[in-house]
Image 1 (cartoon, rainbow, N blue to C red):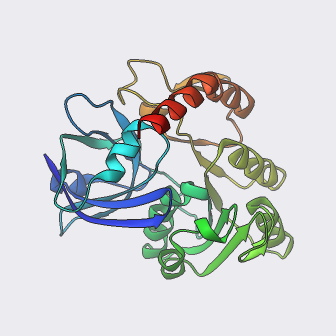
Image 2: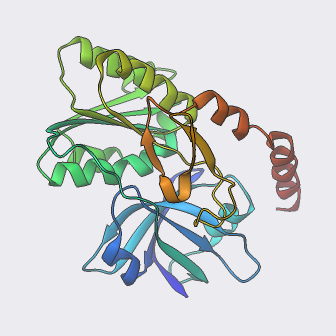
Length: 276
C-alpha cells in the first residue's frame, strides 16, 4: 500500500498528490512515469512523475479528472492509500550533453510533466526559459513552481485573461525572432500543440523533444496499445519513450488514433456523471 501524505487541489479538475514511495523516489528521473491501481478491482493507469524527493522518500503526481479511475483517485484524502504503484517506467529525458540553453514548453495539464524537466535542467545550471499555455486564468497551475526554476517564464492564455494572449507557439516564435538561441526545446501537452511547436522549431534545426502519452496499459510494451510512428518506424511510448524527436513523429496518425474511441469515452463519462 502507498499512502497519500499530501493532497492539493490545483484547480477544479487538476489534483496534486504526494505519495510515500521511497524505492521509486530513489531512482526516478524526469520524463519517467508510474502505473497506479487504486484497489484490486481498479484499472492500471499511467501518470508521469511530476516531482520526487529522494531524502523524504516521496513522489508527486499531478492528474486531471477525466475518467472513473481519476475520479476515484480524486476522492482520496491525506492518510488514504492506493494498492499498487509500479515504477519508475519509461526512458528518462535525454538532451544533448553540450546544451546550455533550453526552452521548456507546457500546455495545460502537460505543465505537470514539463515542471520536473525545467527543475532538473535549472538545477544543473542550464539557461532555462519556460512557456506555459492555458485556456484561461482559472486553470493556471504551477506558476510559483515555474518561477523558481526558470530564468524567464512566460504564461499564455487563449482568451488573454492572464499573461499574454495567444498560443505557446506564438510566444516561442517571438523569442526566436528576438534572437534567442535555444540548443533544445522540450514540448509537453496536447498532441496538436506539440505538433505545431515542432513545426516552429524545424526551420531553425532546433532539436525538439516531445513527450507522447497515448493510452499506455501494461507499461512493458507487450500490449501494443501505445504504438506510434517515429521516423517511419513503429515505436512504443511506454518502453521506447515517452520522449521522442518531435521532427520525426507522425502527429497526424497519432491524432487519428487518439480519437478512435471518442464516442465510447463520451458515453462512459456521461454514465459516470449520472452515477456520481
